[in-house]
Image (cartoon, rainbow, N blue to C red; front, side):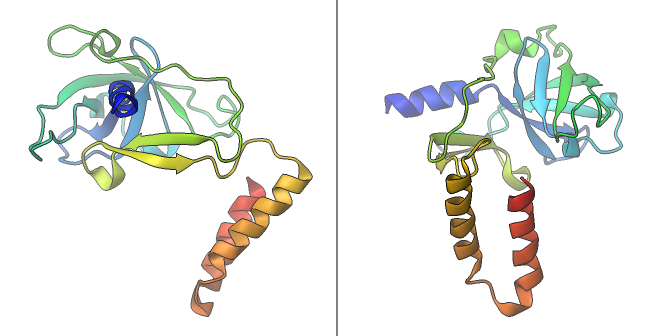
Length: 186
């Protein structure tokens, strides 16, 4: 129970990113500063910052009822070119104050980005808004593809990935090959 309480408290800094006026969010993001957030760059399509908003408390309570969501405007998108991002799929968002004049970091916990190297099989939890649904915490995850591996670890992981796709039917061979290429490229 204590671990779940900590996960819940930490995940309060995660929020849904949506286009204003739409019912469901497009993506997930996380608060990393008083008014700075991190999301995937592919979540930012052609909309201008003022067309999007950060929605906190987009979740259900224990009775399954929607909580009252709190919105903060998106003021700016930082690091907009691939060169600025080092060709990585992330975007930094600047959020503005809500209707009460409070910045998100004064209301919700700011998350600390760790410089610790992720190792294979390290346990982790993932917070998000899958397919625009309310906040979900997946707590049974682990690092499958660490950032750095030895040649021996790479060979072992490649065999595991290949074995996972061996059950895919022949008509889905291109999907399998595409996923294996993604793994090798990563």
